[in-house]
Length: 125
Length: 125
DNA sequence: TTATTTGTATTATTTACTGTAATACAGACT
DNA sequence: AGTCTGTATTACAGTAAATAATACAAATAA
Image (cartoon, rainbow over all chains, first blue to last red; front, side, top):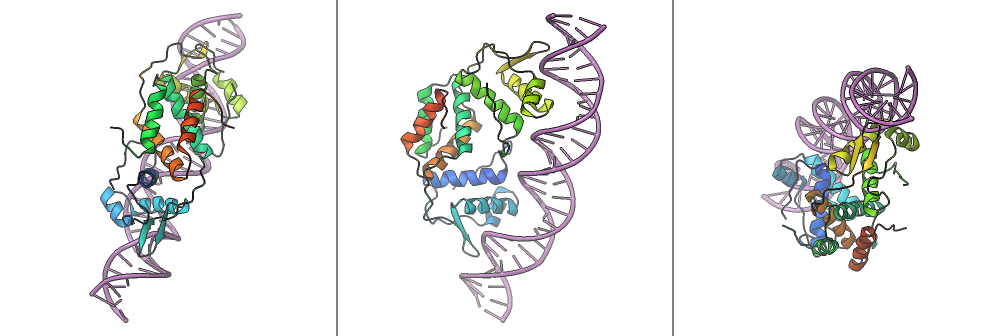
């Protein structure tokens, strides 16, 4: 899986990393039980610190997306808890994004199509 | 317009404030040309610093959402530039939110309905 | 056993952002 | 003249992010 970090983004590196993995799981690019790179390999490949990767893995573990084990490394969880719930923070963010799109004159159907595209795990460009 | 800040949120106060105003404009609660509270009034009402409100207003001004003028105060812009464009940052955020919802087992139609609700300027709870 | 590899923990340091505080200024209205 | 507006400045405290350099526990491989 290709992971790409935006140096200019306001989002911290460990969060960007966490987000990409979550999106990878959702799209099916990362399958159940699949082994993730070691913290050292990924840190080396991305040119960032080991602990930054570790932070991302710890967060993903806490959230129930992955399992980590010494020597076995990190793997995508086979059974991810499904609460069918959208957090308040995500709702607020979603509303902000929808509002900004609407103000800027984006077509409603275009936005809905974009959501569907993301739902299917697709890319936009 | 009622502005409500979440003390526990990771989002900085000035950004929350900016976001609420943008959402207010989108929903129609804040109309074109409508006068916004003065930085001092809003700061006093919200129990925050004057400069924090000023930061939000400056950001909104830079983004083209409002106009500010000494003595006249701040007003919602009558003509907001419509580029019909969703920023890359917003697309990334949207994809993240959609991914998280999908993984957690949220129904696709439910998510689309939520987007439509926000588009119409509605609330959820 | 010995060596290696894994995630993790610790400590320290640097950097940047946030929010506040206390003033002060320029311009426009009353 | 006085008041109200946004804005600018300077200083300070708190927090978070990222890195660096080690070290440890556990499991695998030699």
